[in-house]
Each structure stands twice: as C-alpha cells, then as structure tokens.
Length: 443
Image (cartoon, rainbow, N blue to C red):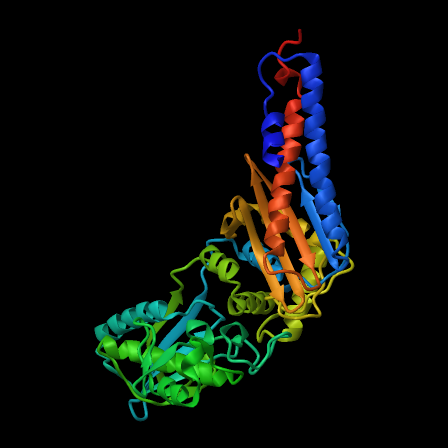
C-alpha cells in the first residue's frame, strides 16, 4: 500500500483537476503521517534509545531522544576515523624506520626496527619491506644479519585500552607500535603438523610453538596481552621474508631504543624509512567495513602520541578524545576512553554522532553500504545495537544515528534505517506534489 501511495504522490505532471489534486495531496500527507506513526510508535517501545535523521536541508526530520547519552559501541570508530582523517588527510601513510649497523669490535651486523603504530604491517607489506631491504643490503655486500633489534617504545609497553578483554578473538588483539597481521595468527593443523592457513604468510618457529599450545578450531586468533610476544613474531616474520630474498637472519631478537644505533663503535650501513603502500583512507575503509578494533585503537594511540609525545598511553588517548571533541564541537556532556568503542563507559548521543557525520562528509565514500543507499557504521555489544551514517536520496546524503541500549533483534537497526529511507522518500514526494509548477493546468 505504501508503494502505491508513493507512486501516486510522485505523479505531479500533466493537467489535473483541483479536486483530484487535493485528493493527491491528502493521500501523500496520509501516507507520510501513517509512516511517521509507525516509526514513532516503534521507537516508543525502546526507551533506552536515541535517534536523529536530518533531511536534505539539514533539518531534523525524525528525532527521538536525540540528546540522550548512550553507549555508542563501534560507531565510536566514526569519531576516531574523523579525527584521524581531519588531522592527517586521507593520503597520509604510516612510517616504519629501519637501520642496519655493523659493530666495529666483532663485525656483528644488526637490523634495527622502530615502529610508529602502523596498523597495516601485514604479510604483503612485510614482503615488500624485505625485498627493498634485501636489495639495498645486496648493494652493500651484506647477506647475513646477526640480530634484529626492536624499538617499540612509541606505545607504552603492555598498555591495555578500556574494553579489551583477554579472549583470543581477533577483535581483542592488543595494540602495539610493532605488530604483524593485526597482532593475530591464522594457523591450522594438518595431520598434527602446524601449517600456515594463509598462503602469503610463512610459518615461523614461534608460530609453530603457539600453534601447538592453542585450540585452532576457531580460526584466526590474537597473540594475547604479552605484546613482546607479538613483536617477536613480527621480527620472525620479517626474518622469514628476508630469507626468501637471500638474506639469512640469526635467531637473536632483542629490544633496544633506536637512538642506540648511533652509538660509538657502530657504523651505519643502511637507513630506510618505509611508508605503507596503503593510504590512511585505504585503511579507514576496511576498519569501517569489518569494524577492526585493532586499526581503530592504533589510530587513536598514534593521534595521542602526535598530540602529547611518545609513548602513547591509555590516559593520553582519553585526554585526546575528550579535549579535541570538546574543542571541535563544543560538546559538554559526553565521554570516550578508547578509539574502537569497546568500553561500556563511553557515552555519546545521536545528535553528537550526527555532528560528527556532518564533518565526515568528505570521506563518506569510506563507509560500507549496509542496505541499498544506506552507508553506515554498525555498533554491537551485548545489549547495545547502533547504526550511524548516511541515507542517499537523489543527490542528497542525509546523516542519521540510531543508538539502542537494550536488547533488540539483530536486524532491528537496519529495519529502522530502511524506514528512515522511506521517510525521506515520502517527504520528497510530498514536497514535489505541492510545488506549483508540478500541478499542471487546472480546469
């Protein structure tokens, strides 16, 4: 019935009588009112919720407890993504520094690595790094490394951001200044033998050991709260890729600040700064699509280190989020303490999320299409369901935010988004039917 009424409402051209015209307008208004009553009555059943939709004129079209502070869950990633993109720009690339030195006393050759929180040091990126390092080392007549020294001091050692738990799920991967493959492993057992479950990732000695100690039936898993374990895996994986390029690497892995690489008795053979092949925009898009907590927290920590100096800490992240948002938007009542939205202490309103979306417009293409013409970020915790983004209607992108802090069916948020999409269409049809130029001639 709604589709029929909408079709009638959209018939605005050609000659019609005044009586017919009045009937069409009344039908449009009746359709719009019925739709409104359905949505508002449904929202009344969800007292722990907030909703706001702006129309093409950026005026509230649907508003229900829009100022109420609620747990935003992973829609927090919209805030983190906005702050990162606004600060660095979508073409920014994360860096990682490499330096090779020779010790004069015994000829030992050491590869030093300093990380700055690059969230996308995945196998393919490490392969590229190894290829470039091997080529440069070959030009200098170096084919063997006696040790790999790691500098992961850009983030506070052992930091744990609020909301992170000690499960092995990939979404609980701990942040680190140096981490391979989002601080996760993907292994499988083949007749009792541990093998890599992804062709692009070589198997390392540490991975085999961890594989024997872990239940592999759940697929990919994180490397746990001991970040040095993940950093050691990073070094082993880089070493495995270097070996493929003809550079042998000893098993010696240690932690030393890179400033020591300029110490007396050390001669620099090579200095290389690697910029990730992916831009920030190309990292934010999968963060939004797959709701990757690791990426979001790496961005938040990197922002904190930029603002307040290294090492990045959980307190600096909290300070950055709250001070910067207060300054940018003038908000008073809100609270955020992590970049991924895992903390149940976080509080935002639907209005505040829409404020962020208004600023996020230059990067709206980075959001996934969750329903036809609905581009949004989801948010899910136990008892929390959220959705915030844009509804595309003709050429307009209308921002909306839905926060529900009570149990609802899994597809509830998407159903609400589709009703909001219909509301925008109903409003556009009603406006079209009331334009004088669309009435045609009146007999």
